Length: 269
Image (cartoon, rainbow, N blue to C red; front, side, top):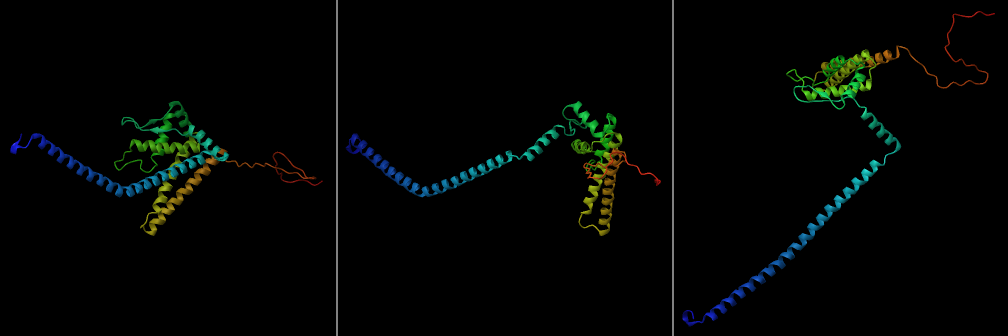
């Protein structure tokens, strides 16, 4: 018995009924809340799925295009394949490369040292290692940016300029020390000519200054052309050779094979 003479069982029964009523009311509200949320969220979900589908489709299209481009690049023509083969052959026999190390060493050779020395010998036209370094230092100093405002050159720039010079020298292929020195001079003149041409394009300068820069660039370019001609004459010994590949002798004609000299005259008999 509890207060007012109400049995305990009756009080517990009434409490349970009240809790069940509250539970069912909250369940009903929760059900309606879910229905309303689903009704509002369904269009948004469909829109999101469409956007995602478009994104996926776009990615697939891009992937397909990239794959096709890759397949097209692999399917080379015979001429293109020849160019690629020649590239790999020339890259294997490319110029010697320098790399920077710690501060105690300015730079050092990359790869096999013996092969690198052989390439340097071919690039300068001399087997003398002292002359190698002497000419390499000379040509590297002709590149813009070799020296900073403090008058020193960074290791990375030194190695970069040396690599540029070695690539050019390998193309010139000096045959001896004379050609090696001339090749180094050609690189220096080329660098100065390009710098002079660059100054011509500076805006805001007086016409007189622009003319001086243009004249300087022209003289350097003429010097470079003269150097090429001098290298050509030195290699050929100053002789010009004419090669006749096809000779046609018609009926009744005569042809002479060999050297032909013209005398002072002939006597008629």
